[in-house]
Figure 1 (cartoon, rainbow, N blue to C red):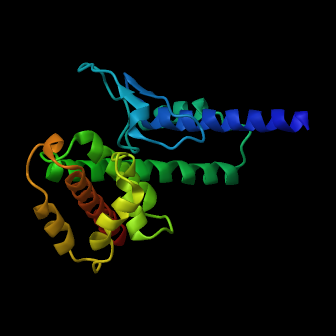
Figure 2 (figure 1 turned 30 degrees about the vertical axis):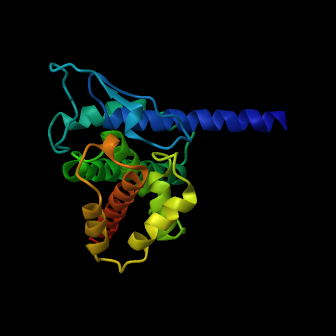
Figure 3 (figure 1 turned 180 degrees about the vertical axis):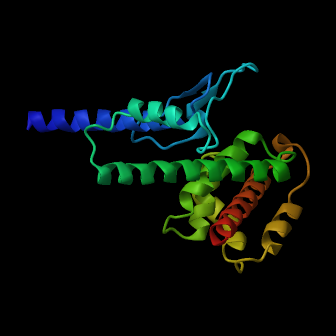
Length: 222
């Protein structure tokens, strides 16, 4: 039993090294560091970029360029794939790039929310909504539950039941109908976030969450 545990730990460490090496290949740039660990959700908070305007990104963007072959050969040699078969590499690669796509989608959604709502709510809240919206979109829970989960952590002073009541007009409106979102936004005063009542903060946050989910659904249908 003990040997099996050690084997499992060795395999986990090997997978973590491969994931980190893949990130190193994609982020082969001066001053870029990734603190991601195997098994953790992938978020932009795990990346740091040094503020160095002189830093270079030596990635060969044209695979047909003469310097591309030695560049990619060096990266391939750096990947610890000796103990992995082709099927396992393919599977792990699919998972890895799915995480990359999710991270990119979340970042794009966050930018969209920032452009529209940055003057009304704190950036931290928009980031939280964008991240949670991406996570709950593929879940089997109801739209009302999705909306509540998108804002619940940011509004801990409000009871979950109260959030569900406020989410109903947004959750049970016909899909593709922006009227409930717009009408909810119009009901909330255009003042500083801290000047809003708890209910107003909840209504505004839920409307943004509904907008975020609608954006993600539209993207998935393209």
